[in-house]
Amino acid sequence: MERPPHDQANLPEIIVGNSEHARLTSLATAALDRLPQAADELLSELERATIVADEAVPDDVVRMGSTVEFRTEEGQKRVMLVFPPEADIAAGKISVLTPIGAALIGLSKGESMTWNARDGHSHELTVLAVEPPAHTVGG
Image (cartoon, rainbow, N blue to C red; front, side):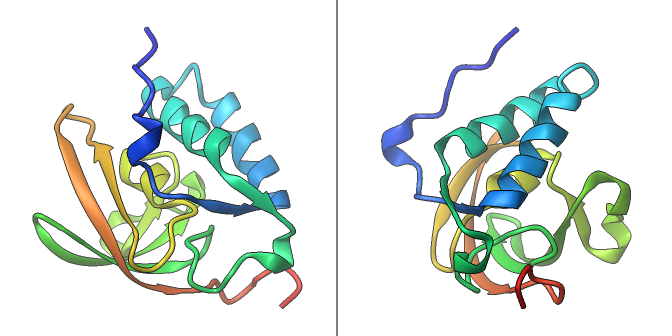
């Protein structure tokens, strides 16, 4: 069962580096059978992303390995966006294959995004700060 697409007019522009876009597209496609909702959300985000050269991704854009501070109705949170094998909620590492992880990818400081939690409820987050990953491509 496919979910209805996001209202494209209300979504912030997102930026993703070329190699990260390819890796995340492969990850999401491979996860369609196991995690259809999360994989579909991530693929939807990737489809609407502006793809740039890896070294052209601004430091304030959320990418894999970024530490992100954001605000939701539950308060402020600080997490690192990681690939599924590295995910550890207790350590503040969230997988890109979660609804909130897929919502964060490609956002810039100051942007807001509505995302649907696994319980089906809609939430909004606003990115307050982004620290680029320590191992950026070309850096």
